[in-house]
Length: 127
View 1 (tube, rainbow, N blue to C red):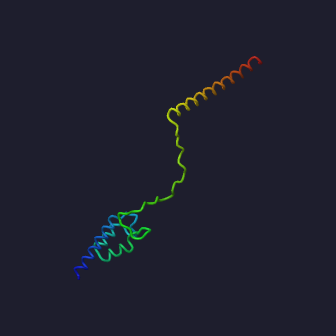
View 2: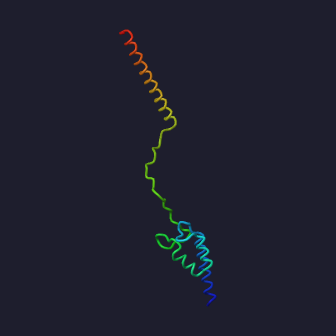
View 3: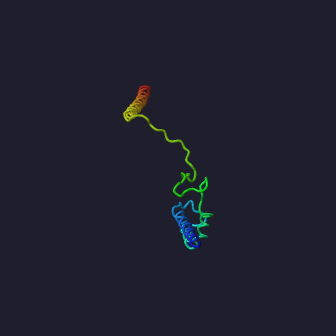
C-alpha cells in the first residue's frame, strides 16, 4: 500500500511539473513558474495539490489540456479603423490617369499665363 501511494504522489508530481513547464507564463497565477517548480519538487504532494488548486488558470470551459489552447484575445484596445481604400485600377489605367492629370495642369498653367499676358496687354495701350 505505501508503494502504491508513493507511485501516485510521483505521478501527480510529474504531471504537475509537465503542466507547469508547458503552461504559458500568462496562465500561471500568484507565483513565477520557477517558484512553482521548486515547490512541487520540494513538497510533491502539497505542492502539486496547490498548483492544481490555485496556481494555474483554467479555461472558460473548465479544465483544458495543456496542448489545446484557445485563441488568444488581443490585449489592449482593438483598432477598429476602416482599412484604407484599395486601388483596383491596372498600372496602365493609373499611368493614363496621371497623363491626363499632367495635361490638365499644363492647360491650367497656359490659361493662367494667357490671362496674365492679356491683362498686361490691355493695361499697356490704355496707359
